[in-house]
Length: 304
Image 1 (cartoon, rainbow, N blue to C red):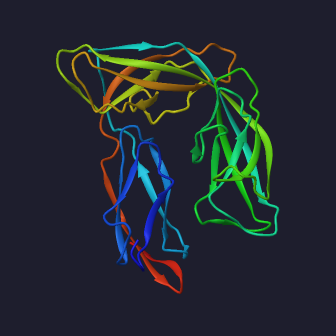
Image 2 (image 1 turned 60 degrees about the horizontal axis):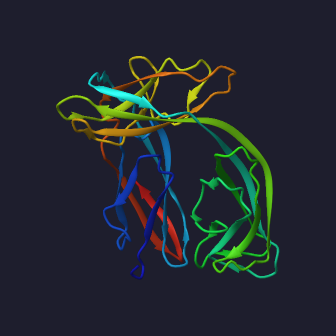
Image 3 (image 1 turned 45 degrees about the vertical axis):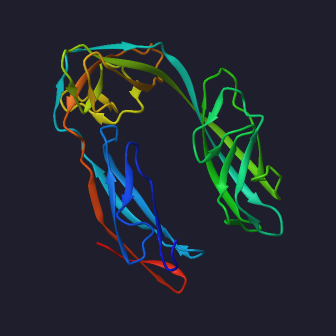
């Protein structure tokens, strides 16, 4: 980046959205952020955090609010077939890890938590993971430091497709896998059992069908929920999830993964239908975000 410029980054983007700036890094004092949504973006209000960095200067974040509305109307589609794969049982595991520098000198990044002897068939879903054996979870980037006595608290999210209990041995290492002067203390595990099923949609019409498309999950077992729902059917109030395909040619197929939580003793059952809806929200520019450099700090001057 050029001297005096500010590099911007957006944190907290919901599923199915992308963010871009009209200029980045910023040499002047402002940039326009555009957040683009799709029909897989869940409805709701989300807090976005824009962070600016310049060399070793500290960053003061700017908080913005993004609201995604529900589709206003939906129309059932009849010239399609829907088929399901078999059910797959999945366990999501949340576990807190506290990483602490127990030495007397600062540790300089990149720093990782190595997940040694991770249960086969288990994958880490959270954070920036470097694949390999063992997998490495990034906790400090290049040039970032973990000072003596300083701690970093992580929430690890795992996906376990096996009947085995999740286990691993964490260690603080550098990019070469060498042990660093630190400790990793694990908290208890919180388990959530989920059921996955994949639905395949086929266009049986002789013409192209244009989206946005949503799969509406109807007559779901009482007490069960569609955990990856992105919208609510405005007609039936059934949960829906958006398809990524913008259109379907004659004979074309699209797949969508449904994930359910069923805490009841009843077997999971549901019906589903494909509907066409009004786009949740078009690409929308967020109001200008302004920064200026002063005394080595990046200060927010205005969010108008």
